[in-house]
Length: 142
Image (tube, rainbow, N blue to C red; front, side, top):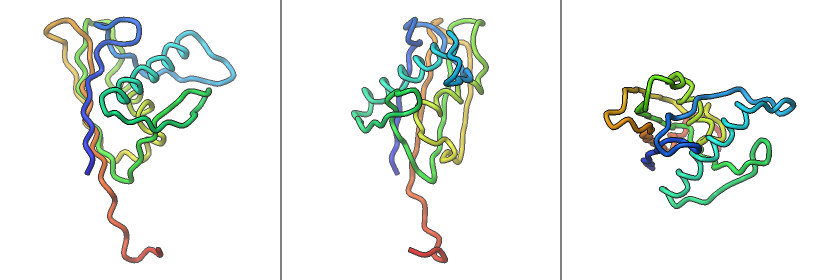
């Protein structure tokens, strides 16, 4: 089992700011909020690379480098600390973290997410990812 722990402090615009939630991005119509969301994904990936020392990247949508975490048995936990009451929904922050870290978030088998106001008024996300090798089905070929 591989375990990755990291903390994302603030966001790409403000080191104390709230995490950024999911925004639907269409390749044929890039809006400002979509560009901001893609910058957030890059910010999360860069922090992941820095904290884990991993550098395996491939080109993803829109030519952005992404890391591929893959496992048939991935478990993700996040704890969000809000800077203030002007923040995204918890589920949208979770979606953004999954988009940033997983090539295909269908590989995630369990999710635990919680949030609270930050006692020091600094936005952040604590992330724990556990990847385990799936047990092969004895009935399957190969």
